[in-house]
Length: 264
Image 1 (cartoon, helix red, strand yellow):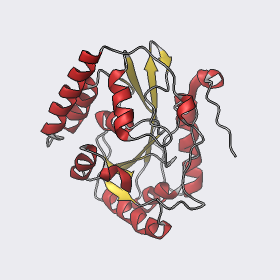
Image 2 (image 1 turned 120 degrees about the vertical axis):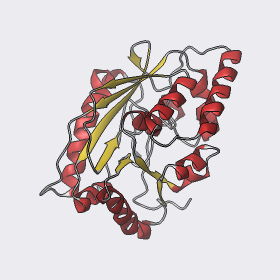
Image 3 (image 1 turned 135 degrees about the horizontal axis):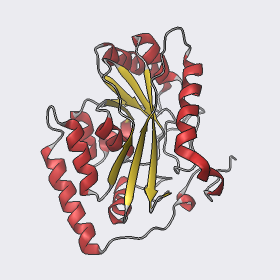
């Protein structure tokens, strides 16, 4: 991929990954088989939330939801981006069409499923396509659908996070729909972990194998209050949503994370 000055980049790397207890090789194999079985069913019509929760159960991950999103016709769902499991956890709480980087469409299995669930793909290397993508997302939400976006544009370690890019918020303004912030936390043994993160140049399969091996992974999804877009501008919306999510996602453990990013 050709990089440009506006390409999202995270200073987090493999050094940020924590070591956690793992399950036995036979248990990992069973989890993979269970995952394949769930994936082969596809996100069933009318049962998408159940299906995504089944994906998490197959991986041995527990979902904990704090708060409940009220029914909303057309909404932009935004959250912090840590793991390939983020979109699974979001859909387990708030079924939504996703805005994802073009590369996700090329991942094994996940790419095909993403396309089947109506994912809108964006080519981050081509800024010229951004206005058309914003217009497409606005049209989807104008039609009453929810669209999920991770405005940081790339994954972080989970203890640190990036700035929210404002483009997706413009789509919400254009569609006249509110923003729903979700804060995601990955926890093992009651403490935040970076072990489920998807970092650096590692492949999807590498991240999948590490996730399948984790013992006691719990994913917290904090449902935060809606933010109205009426009379707002996109940068202010992005900053407000970022602050709301960061407060919950990073929490009091931020200073002790051992994974402080260093900008070059």
